[in-house]
Structure formats: structure tokens, C-alpha cells
Image (cartoon, rainbow, N blue to C red):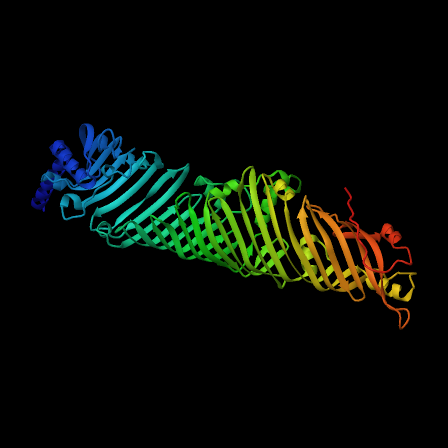
Length: 601
């Protein structure tokens, strides 16, 4: 046993002695020459360093190059405080450099599109080039400059590991970096880098995690004819506002543009990002369809076709009211035409239900186009209260402010429901419709509203007016019994048709030909209503058809002039004594009455 133990101890001692002596046996010149040749083969750049490399035996053999630089001094690809290379000890004893890993201490990477500053790794059978190993970066920085030399991307606090044993093996990277003040965790795996360099397709997996956004990709990529990646892409953020601000876009605080995500089949290339099958979520709304984002010529461009089951716009309407200062200060809020220059948009939207406050639309289809700073929105068709709504809006900059044009058409709308929701007026019922065309210009919302001008027309058929029984007056005229008319107030009046032409301008809505036709009567009215208030004023007459007093006598019409005032939700009707006096002459022939125009200025 002792005879066996002694040789073993001698061999162990010899190995220990060899290991201890290895740092002294290594030729640093040979290592430096071989490593320089490796770096040149990998990157096309030369390696430079200060002083003499230091050899250490610490968990393997390592050589430390102080103040290392890859590339020329005036335009280096990378420069670092130190480059530590771990090598195969046995291979080194036989005069070969076999790299195991590289550790870059506080490196600074300088990248640009120029060929001299890009890695030119040759994927061939040269053993010098086919072995790479692990690269560890500690406290690094990276700056990428565009063709003009301006910084286009920069990151710092880079702590990462890149594992690539050989060109035939998979490439794996993971680590952390800081970008725009936020720590970002990243990971990447390329199944076959050699195939990628040869123009063939290979599997690619990417992941990104930061406070503003999380992203993952799993698919394939190839570089023949330009970089293209296709596969499943997922992006999510807790706040779209925070993400936009992180990317130098508009941000700010608010209850809208919060949680958002997009996931689906995607294609990423130099011409942009596109989703052929995507699911988007924003503030509780969910849409499906196709979407693309491209750099564009003058500005980024977003295009797509999206379908939603339910679209709730109420939070955005509330946020708009709050952003404009509320009911008291909205008039001084500037028209934000500058936002139209940030992005070109071409979207087609459809939804089974659209909510905006108390207004609910059924199945709807709309289009939104923003191009060269001008907005064009159209509502192809929307179901509103069982009827149909179509419309369009155009908005763009104009000298001194903005110019807008709006057109809309309603058909088959229940009048009571519509007027109650829009104006708080529940007294009129029937089947309504109409159209309006408006134009405006100004620098603020108040100026825009104040400059509104246009025209329109309203019609309601087979309707009723609650709170007033015109039939009581008709009966009184025909029976000659005017006292008492207790049933006049509190009843209701049916009518066959209500029509009115509208004129909008000078801050008010006017009508000169409102007409209501019912059984045995006609109402004619002229009036006005200031825009932005609920007050109304007008003058009209009730024309009662009086039956002939004798079988062979003529029928006639009895005019009952009145004044209209008050508010939409509480109108007042009083006799027009001037009109009554004008027609008090019993000998005057019955016929049309020329209406005056009430002008309470």
C-alpha cells in the first residue's frame, strides 16, 4: 500500500508544482499575439493595451490586459479599463490559446453604421474564428451614432453575459442595462447564428422587462435581403402614458391611457412592425384585427383595421372635459392641432356597441385618418336608439388657429329618447330625423364654438308634445266655450309632422319656419336659442281650423298668437297680446298672419 501511495503523492506534487509554476511559464507575448489574432478574426479590428499582461491562476488561468482597446485610438469599437481572458491551461502549455471566457471591466462601446466599426465575424471552419466562449460585461456603456455622427441610442450600467461556445452552437445573452433612467432586463437566444449569417432562417427568442414595458418574441429571423423577424410578439404596459413619456412622447397624468397590451402574430423589419392577427387592450377596451407601424417619410405612420365588441369612450370624454378646464374655463383652451403632426393614422374601426356618457350607439363603423397634420374622421353608419346616424369631421390648422367642418344625418330616431339624452328635453316624442352642416375656425375652443356657422333641418313625424293639450283650444274654438280651460295644461298634444329649418351663426341657433301640423290645427314659430345655454325665445301662432257655423257656411281659421320663453327643460308659453290686438278686428278676413321676430338683446 505504501509503495502505491508514494507514486500517487509524487504525481500530485508534480501536478501542483506545474500548476503553481504555470503563471511563470506562460509567455505573455505569445498570449497577446494570439489574442490579437483572435480579436482581428472576430471583429476585423486590432487589440491594443497598456503595459504587460498580468497572469493569474484563480479558478483557472486568466490573463489581464489593462486599458484595453479594440479598434484605432481615434475611432475605437470598444475601450475598457481591463480585459480579463480565461484560457485553457493545458492548451496553453502546448503553445495554443484556447479562450474560455472574456470579462470586460467598465467597457465603452462605440457603434455606427460604418463598416469599419461593425463586427465582421467570419463563419467558417477556421478554429481561431470558430471558438468564442463566454463574454461578461461589467458596468459597461454603449453609444450608437447614426450616419451623421449624432447619438441615436445610448445605454449605461450594462451588466450582461453572452454565451457562445462556437459558431455551430446557439448564442445566448441575458443581463441588465439602464436606458433613459430605467433599469431594463433583457434576454436573447439565436439557435443558429451561422445560418443567420449565411442568409438562412433560424429561431429567435427575445425578452425585455422594464417598469414602463414588458415584451417577448418567439419566432424566426433571417437577414437575406435585410433583417426580418416573424413570430408571436407580446407587449404590455401598466401605463401607456408612462411608456409614451419614456419614449419621448406625450405623457402626463390622467385616468385614461393606462394599462395597455398588444399580442399576436407579428413581422418586424426595417420598414416597420406589423401584426396580421392581433389582440389589443386599452383601459378595459379590447380589439382584434390587423395593425402596422412604420417609420414613414415625415413622421411615423399607424394603420390598421380593428373590431371591438364594446367600445367605452366615456373616460376619454370625461378626461377631455377635465383637460379643457371644465365648464367654466373650456372656452380658453387652445385647439390642439399640434398633436396632429406627431403621427399619421389610417384606421378602420367597427364595434357592436359604443358608449359615450349617456349616449349609446349600437353596431357602428368608423374611419380615422390623420395625414400631414389634418384629421378626417367619418362615421359610416351607427345604430342610435333604433335609428341611423352618419357623419364626418374634418379638422386642421389655419392661420391663427384651426378650421373645422362637421356634417351629420339622423334617420328613424325616437325623438323623446334622443332629446332627453342630448338636451334634457323629454316633452317631445315621435320618429325624428334631420341633418346639419357646420363650419368653424378659431384658436381656442371658445372661439371655435363662437364662430360656428351652417344650416340644418329637423323633422319629427307621428309625435306628441307632453304638458300642453292643444286639443282643448281646438275644442274651445269650435264650441265657443273658453272658460274654464282647465285641461289645457298637463295634457298632451298629438301631431302628424314637425319640421324646421335651422340657421346657425353669431353664437345662436335660429329657425324661421318651424311648423307643427296636427288634427285641426297648425303651429308656426320663429325663434332662437343661444349656443352653450338652455334658454330659448320665440314668437308664434296657433292656427285653429274652425268648422263652418252653418251647413252652407265657410270654414275659417282662428289665430292664437303666443310667446315662447324659458329654457329647454322648462319652456313657458304666454299669450302674445300684440298679436291678438293686431287681429282683434272681427271684420278682418281670416288668413295667414305675418309673424314678427322676438329679439331680446
